[in-house]
Image (cartoon, rainbow, N blue to C red; front, side):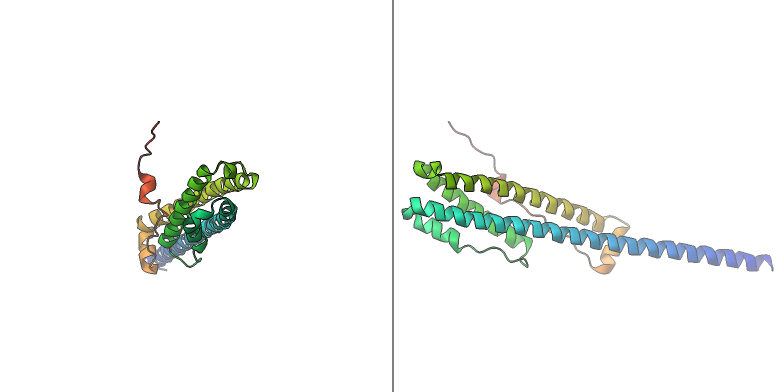
Length: 190
C-alpha cells in the first residue's frame, strides 16, 4: 500500500472517531437536560403535595375556628371557597394560590388572637403545629424546585450545551417566587 492510502485510512478513522465522540456527547447532553426537566417536574409535584396538605389542614383549621368566630364568616367562607391548584397549573398560578392561602391563614391567626379560648383549644393548637410543619415542607419543596430550575437554566444557556438546548427547543423555566410583601423588611414595634 502506498503512503497516501494509509494516510487516507488514518484520516478516515480519525474523522469517524471524532464524529462518534461528538454524537455521543450530543446525545449525553440532550439526555442530561431531559433528566433535569424530570427533576423539575418532580419538584413541582412536591410543591403540589405540600399545597394540597396545607389546604386540607387549613380547611380543618377553618372548621375549628368557625365554631369560635361565627361573625368572621366572610373570611372563613373565602378560605373554604379556595380551590387547590390543578397539577397542570403554571408555576405562577401555583404561586398566586399559595399567596392567597397564606393571606387567608394570616386572617385566621388574627381571629385566633381575638379569641383566647380558641388559642387554648388543643385541636386548634395541634392543627397550628401541623400547619407550621407543612409550611416547612412547602418551603423545602420550593427550594428544591428552584435549585433544579437553576441547574437546568444554567445548563441550557452555557456553551456548548446551549447548542443542544436550542436545537431541541428547550427554554428557561420560571422560579417559584415569593410575593412582593414577603420581600419587604419586617417592621417590629414595641
